[in-house]
Length: 486
Length: 81
Image: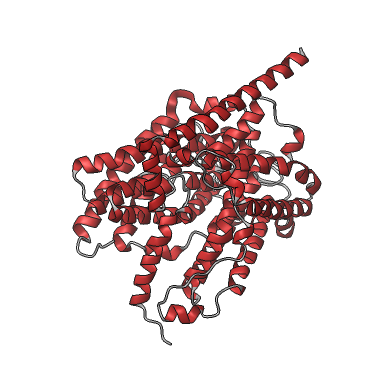
């Protein structure tokens, strides 16, 4: 068995990691105790930070719920639950010709988000043994850049073409780092992995398992069967046929193409400790193809005379981005829109399972020497990215609250809509600004070598398109043809 | 030499900012005002669709779809009162 020096924190993504390092196993001589790990490591602190935010957000909704909530639900009368935090947590909105419009009515919520994240991360850094003051010195600028990215993404034409904020956040950071250079004081606040992991644990609360069955068995087959088959086949194709050097790049592209685009790429990249440039490249590929597929697929469906339900299921299972699926589905009509958006929602929820399985596979097979002995449970636990546990735990917890509480859907929905999804968006936006601030254009170029990532994406997506159509046809038109009503 | 490098960095930064400003403040708003584009944007607004939504919880139309499913669910499972 090959021995290498083990990093202090095995869960921290190391931007300088190369494939040789990733393929060797390390046997640390001294491991931190669980308590020390829980009080200092980034993964555990991502769980604590997101846990605090979720607890406060749910408490706000719980204590602010209408008095007659259970009676209204029993009487099946419409009831609206709104988070009291909604006004205090916001992001820049949509604008057409004047960018000031995007922040004019949201400034209070933007300032609120800045205060909440700034305060939480300053305290967290201080507790982790890092400098909270150093973080605080750079954070206002990083947050301002994230706000600028949101404003760029909020232009109505940009939004209509599915060009998500992640792309603009990356661009904003890249402009700084590749022109005037990233000042050193900003680096203390560019905490890419910490932002991503905290955002992912928050995202866990949005992964509501009960929604997996939203379309019944046909939806389960289209999303649950095709998605893993395409993911695994594409990954094997990348390794065996294309011989892509970086396994993590291969995995991130396979996941973002087969599951649901940017959000799946973020979760998988964190689970398999991919390099920042690999995540950037995967997202670029996904967004580029989504723009094309969003325009072309409804035309193909119309030209082939495919009915709206089958067409919607095909769109939902193939187009990466959630918003683009809805836009393409709406072109075919309301039925197609509903089926497409629901299939995509089921795929969105599969992120949790995907991230968990990828993390297990990585620590068990990829990070060990293939000639060495099998690694034990304690080693798997030691190497496992703990924030994934937080992600899965929050998903289970909020799925239970959603299903068991009277008014669970209304309460959990109000919590997500009024606070946590906006904070999660800020964390991802801050993460992509941070990636840009730490990336040199030249580091992105080797990833494109030989065009293999592009070939991988095209081949994987072709399989996805064919297999989804076949399974959707069988499920929606043959096996369950009588029971499918959107 | 150092002064020259600084000047080049500042110049490239200014150039990029100028290009972005022209695209976002002039070209994109002008495109948004084109009748066909304006119609498309209005249609998206009416449908409650944000094509740049990353996750289903960011999609306004999803609230309607889920509310419809929730109503159907409540009809199927009558509450005891």
